[in-house]
Image (cartoon, one colour):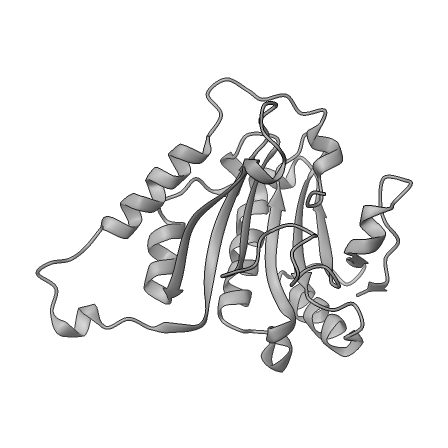
Length: 227
């Protein structure tokens, strides 16, 4: 099984010069290696996050399984490590069609079958082609900051991670939660997400259960919640 956008991926051909996992990993390594040997003790103080997070990169390759196409890039546990990593990789808007970034709590894989995701779902934000240049990067960064900053308050424990899919028909950002039965948490997370992304009131975003997405017969699964 795959994250959202796998159906579209079958029609997106790999392009020459496509940003590959090795390049992303190299950028992450450069970020990790960037040290300040002459920094003062005050400059070396880091700000720990409540959770450790892992960045993943996906690029479809015909000779590998879908799961093998997911590459774990790097993990971070402080604010400074996050920015070092984020500033050394390509923004989402510059990924080639068919590629994904995912950021999940350490130990959780960006796939429906992972034990932490199996009973959950995701808030889904759809962007059109024009929004890739104007809003995709801002939306994605804000989602990352909401997660690592535990901005969903007591409901932050329900957040597993997020995925950005770059696709020819339109890009998608999904915020994944752990349990579709936690109605209050799901609605709170969706409400905060919509408010912080400044999504207009007349535009609705929907929450879909992974189980519904797996067995969908049409192009989209039924929304269990909307805000």
